[in-house]
Image (cartoon, rainbow, N blue to C red):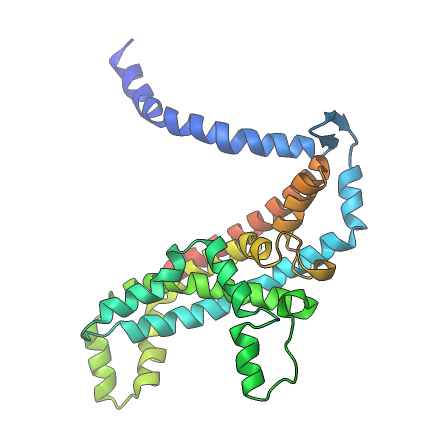
Length: 292
């Protein structure tokens, strides 16, 4: 083998393990799901080609459209997380004694398992004696306990609050890193010009955090579209009364593993792939503009 050919092949040999890994765990499953979406398949019998029947079934499936709407509603978590995380980052970005402890406390929900957090939130919103009902009764705001997790109107908002609580600490760290990269001289100049605390952060911190804000918008919106753990734990795997908490990923899981409709679930997965791919492209464009 000539030196020229060896030098050309060497980079690909280093890439080979990663390429094999991606082919095995990304490309092959993607192609398999694409194929299964055109079949009627479960674990008890071989796949039977059905053409576009699964996609036609999606059009008339009310639960699918409800799940799709819930997934898009879940995107409202993103602006709430951004505002909350920036506020927390500003609060803990101060040279105060013991500030590291507060940063760690805000970050604890991030490293806590979703199942443990879900059980805690089930206790908080328990209809027979949970703390939330207790406080509302004590304040005279309600006359009898509310069974939050069996009320269709409350299932999705509670899951969204749980997602926000679990994720805000992580994004706080992202914004904290961004704040610490902003020159202190800019804040000193703002104080000299007579800016108050709000004006200082609005005109300096927020513009300086623009790349971080776009980055957080990208990853948090994609995470919101793919939410599953919170819905599963809070509703005990049911999706809530009248499927009120069902999202795209939860409905996909239910069809595949509860109802054994693997072909139909694969069609849902392909629709979700197209949606997340579209969001990814849009968000990457926004990220490029933010860095530009």
